[in-house]
Amino acid sequence: MELAGIGKVVLGSIAFGVFWVMAVFPAVPFLPIGRTAGSLLGALLMIIFQVITPAQAYAAIDLPILCLLFGTMVVSIYLEKAHMFRYLGRLLSWKSFGGRDLLVRVCLISALASALFTNDTTCIVLTEFVLKFTKQHNLPPLPFLLALASSANIGSSATPIGNPQNLVIAIQSKIHFGKFLLGILPAMLVGIAVNTVIILCMFWRSLSSPSKDVESLKPSPTPPVEAATEMSSHKFSPAKMSHMSTPEVVDDGEGSHRFSPAMMSHPAVELGPEGSMSGDVEKVGKLGALPAVIDEVVEEKERKGRKRALFLKGSVYVVTVGMLAALLSGLDMSWTAITAAILLVVVDFRDAGPCLEKVSYSLLIFFCGMFITVDGFNKTGIPSAFWDLMEPSARVNRASGVALLSIVILLLSNFASNVPTVLLLGAQVAKSAAAVSASDVDKAWLILAWVSTVAGNFSLLGSAANLIVCEQARRSEQHGYNLTFWKHLSFGLPSTLIVTAIGLPLIRG
Image (cartoon, one colour):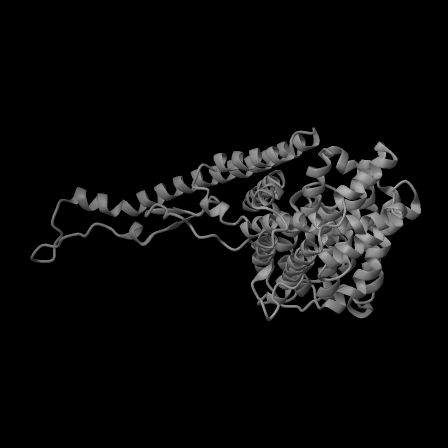
């Protein structure tokens, strides 16, 4: 594609520049409107500047990607409701053999959870767990936070549902779930191992001191029951209910109940003129038995509530396994995720409002604005002109070409963020690979997925998962920790370069 007219190039670049500034620095002093509003502003400027038409803007929005993203969010919410992430938190500190053992567990659990439930969700849920057990075991938070964020990014590279850029690649390339997984899994497993070794080497001494290696790993003065409760009670912030529960016994949705004040009000007993009870002895006997009747009713409701909670929990796991099996068999990913989400809503058999309120609609809107903005920037011809310069030296059929392509993806992913990089380069990289050999097309897409994902570990701004861990740690009231840009970069720079280089030869198209 040739460069457009000078007016369109300049105005399109301005619109994309606004989008980029808001995406990378969402709280800039002169326009602190955030990423979501920034993406919509970029999209609107593309239309106002007539870089693209309104019809082209609507066409640029990729509905299959949005549906897949929405479906996986809903499934993750129900998995959280079924205590999946609570069990993962318990697994982190179960029968631990020391600080190094804990760090290895964080890396493995973070990688596995991210591959199945997205890296952002994993970091949202597990950051608080990590801060709690590091405090309980008198361990430094830094290596564990780095392990959580970096392993979440590397682990998410293995599946199309692991992160947003993989969703884009899977939909655009039409590579089915099983082939995607098998193509990147070897690189992911080796990458996790190498990344873990790097963290262990960097923080070997701080993970246990020779004088009190055993003592430091004993739970601090917190009572055992309290500590166990702390480690298993973290949840997403509760959503607002859209309607009230029954006034007598209020079901919290997890099999436990609480009384409303009205439950304990008994009929008044009238006294006669001389203080004697009016009514016969039989009536008094019935009134005396009322608390026992209430207890029996409550116990029965609690029994039913526990059965219902157990049924829902089992259903969530069955539906999730079924969704993964359907994805592995090659069924349409978007409709598979939507089907799983709707099945869980139906099985829950109650107003879905509180669960659906937890969906990150701002992220879906951000994607809509980004699709329009990137499509407009593509129509300026700048990405095509840039790729035409790089293409002869960046073909995936030779090692030097793969190396150069990886460097370009790594730099662009940290400069423009990984999802816009995939949208800008994806079609161009695939077209270049097809011109050489049709068999290299899938490999080119998978290289793009691997490098753009691992590139997120380069700096604190490289991925949303890093920023989530940083913000969650900083805002934690009881276990606050400030993960700075430079602390992350001192680990992220060597880790990203080494893990990317080692994983590239293991990618199979």
